[in-house]
Length: 236
Image 1 (cartoon, rainbow, N blue to C red):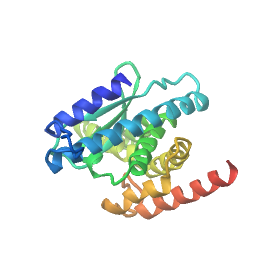
Image 2 (image 1 turned 30 degrees about the vertical axis):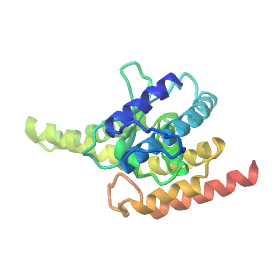
Image 3 (image 1 turned 180 degrees about the horizontal axis):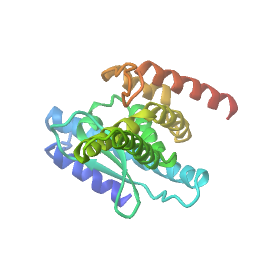
């Protein structure tokens, strides 16, 4: 909880919120921006504190030997597009990072919980390691073909880099849908509505079904969330 309170202070500071004062009449004062920053902060802390123990428990149940001590952090840079991602620190601890534009853009706790469940699922499902393996295979294949064709050392290196990029993207859509599926279940286990949460996809650009795109069409993501939620509700 101390960690989450710290994140709340970071978020409020980054939004340049002024303290909210409650006068004798009971009506909170402060600018609309300050009140919105406070609302977003409280929602973030509430969702994170509710979802984190569920995610960590399921991580330990579904995996063996995987570090399931999630650290939830806030990226306080303001100029970027809304974004959330999962990564690892140098000791292999899973990091769930959310930037302020994303935290401010979600319309309700269900959307934030679904995004958080989705990102944590990437770690539980081992997607980072699988992407690295895919990239290594792609690099090996492309550089091998270039080498056998008599390409120069520079061209072989270029082929290796291109192959790594292609390899990393080959199964990325599948990994996103897998994370949507498990993320749906984690969201429901924490008491939130993933179908309502997946409405977040309706407000972001649709990547379509591009060849070697990194994300599947929004319609496919919403469909798998609805199917998974219905199946989970029917059996639990």
